[in-house]
Length: 199
Image 1 (cartoon, rainbow, N blue to C red):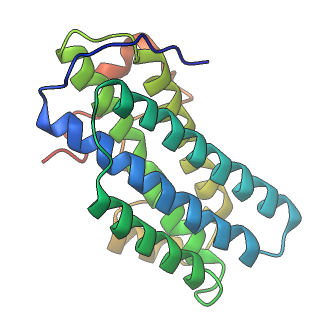
Image 2: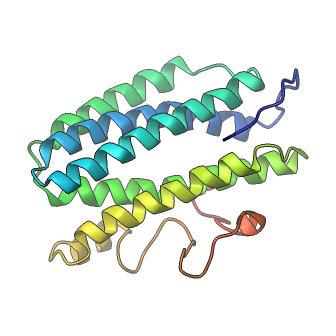
């Protein structure tokens, strides 16, 4: 359970502020996408697994909003509209693009999301704010688990090598440098994701 101390502190890091705004809205897009994805698959276990991931995304959105409220970061109307449209379009497309592509692009997306929360943690820490370490670590870990879930579903597909070559995610390529089998400890998170997704 996360714990937030009331504060009047304003963030002075424009990159961190934008990450919070974008993550908040993007989590809604992901949740919408998983609604369509879950309804489009026939396998009952897959439906349950994807539905749980949707719930996780709504929970992440709630946690990010708590951080935004804490530091008086306003919700971006532009991001909300942009990601609403993206999420709804992806949700609808799941019915017509077959089984493989929703799994593949979900895994690709989750792979990138892992580093977003680690970057947030690193940026907060650079401001000497460590009170959010646990929740940001937990969200990055959950995103990594999502990535693994979707990869496991397509790892034997004949389409994976081609999509990996074109979209740079799959068995040999990832958008983060975390390997849960090697260990992923909260004390070590700031050494991960250097250069991943950063501009």
